[in-house]
Length: 292
Ligand SMILES: Nc1ncnc2c1ncn2[C@@H]1O[C@H](COP(=O)(O)OP(=O)(O)OP(=O)(O)O)[C@@H](O)[C@H]1O
Image (cartoon, rainbow, N blue to C red; front, side, top):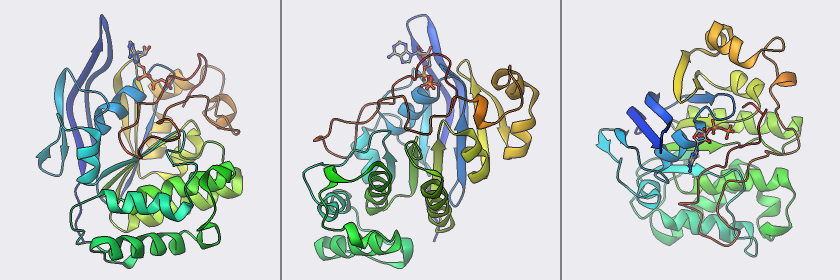
């Protein structure tokens, strides 16, 4: 089934005299994983917020399919299929996993004509069916009735991902989805993301772990100083002289010199624990010296 692509055209966002995002064009096509990397202060979080609707651009537009969604709220975008995950999982901690997912499945009001992961859904019965199908698909049935707030980080990340899938996305924006995951969990997560893309979802992945980004994505955008300085296949971007010079003042581009944080992202984006699962605040800048 054909789904909507996400695209950005000529996006500009200024904070006073600082241009955080400068004339950025980006395409996040259906069925592909697109990556976004850049050093501290490059403008990734700001761009992400312009795409989700948390921030408004000073110039340019955001398109979901052919539709101009530039002035739409995050919730309105979410109901139209542009769904995000947060750096800090946006789950209701006192609810069970299943109830968290049900909120997401019911939140998207429009009829869903697709068959994400092989199911179809209409109404509340459909929403329950989605929850069960997503839980089964991600092999999370054993924690169906667990209270979300009691889960360890790895499980929480997967439930956050499941929550996003229950909203039946056309486009999935993943903000630091692998932070806090161990190697095995990251491997499992990467495979899941690929499966979802293969199902036709357009995925944008922003993560500190550049090795993960280069390994998983089909295309990658590298930002520096608010601008896209390189874009294309991972190998080409990795070899790009500007990318190399920015990332690699101290050697080859590997996770060892990117500041990737295996124990969890240093940023604190995401809504407060009991706020609804859409429309949370933007990612927060990571500390100086980190790269992602
Ligand atoms: N609300 C704001 N007010 C003023 N300046 C801001 C604001 N948000 C971001 N900036 C500035 O815009 C620039 C881009 O920041 P942004 O957080 O988008 O970068 P980033 O690539 O996400 O960095 P990091 O990886 O450190 O999170 C930075 O110089 C930052 O200080």
